[in-house]
Amino acid sequence: MKTMLSAFALTALLGTTAMAQELSGEITLGSYTGVFQDEYTKAVIAPFEAAHPGVKVNYYSDRGSAGLLGALRAQAGDPQMDVVIFDASAGLIANKEGLFAPLSADIVPNMADLVPQATVQERFGPAVTFDNEIISYNTETVEGTPTSLAELWDPKYAGRLAVSAMPNIQGTGLMVMTSAMLGEDYTKSVDRAIEKLAELAPAVQTFDPKPDGYTLVLNGTVDFATGWNARAQYYAVQSDGKLGVMTPKEGTILQINTINLVEGSQNPDLAKAFIDYALSPEAQAQFTETMYYSPTNAKAAPSAEAQARTVFGQLDATLPLDWAWVATQNDRWNAMWKRRIISAGN
Image (spheres, rainbow, N blue to C red):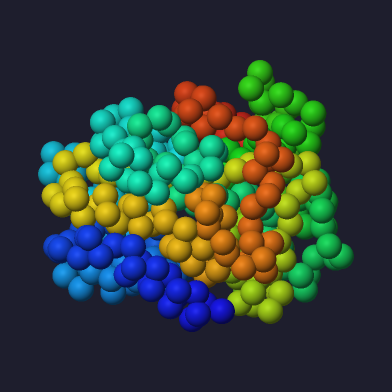
């Protein structure tokens, strides 16, 4: 399936971009390290380079959005990256600081076919992938098939939990999901969620999973870990089901990765062409097949099997989360995590 889809994607790209064969030069894409880098290179970067023999896409990787944002700030006077893919909350901060250039369907035509949820902030980088927060678990050590976030508070799993705390947005999501479990409106107060998570803290083995929660689950270090659906589904397949994926019945949050043009890019035309391809139906479908991120282009047509492992079809059922508003709360919430949750685990 993947080989056939890759061939289809490349054929479509060659057929629709003949007018851009003069593209040449190098750009640097900044995004996540690890399996994301490996699979995005195969699914998106390699076909783009194959269609444009004079083009080279270098990859600058970092473990998370915070590191990529820090690199952008450090390079503001002399950008070394041309395109950046990272989460929407970091993108909103970068836009506010003038680190990204405006984008529109006039210069990136495939933006015209994106679903409404792909617009995170008008005139700036749109969503390139959708994902949702999950709880991964070891199917060999966890009893049955868990369905509720409340499982994390079961005493039998004490010391066997990995939680990515704020400023990682998994921490933000877990707090919002905990609020939903308690019937609390997080836009008015998160006090009840903070108190509940403080109760959980002594049972948490690590608030900074390294290398990541999926690995800790698979090697038996922990039973449960916060995570993202796409990566968890990838590891679930790779592990023949040893890693389980729970979307809590209380609700989940939508995680959005945006694709952005760096202000002052050294090769803006090539960068825009790459962004356009990354948002194309072919590239979107291929990455869904490869790593189970939900496409943002309404015309993308991944297989039903791959699509079933994504948040596709459930976008309107996720817990409402305005990332622009959340960005205004980050400093306060991060301080609450440090002072009232993480400290409770020491």
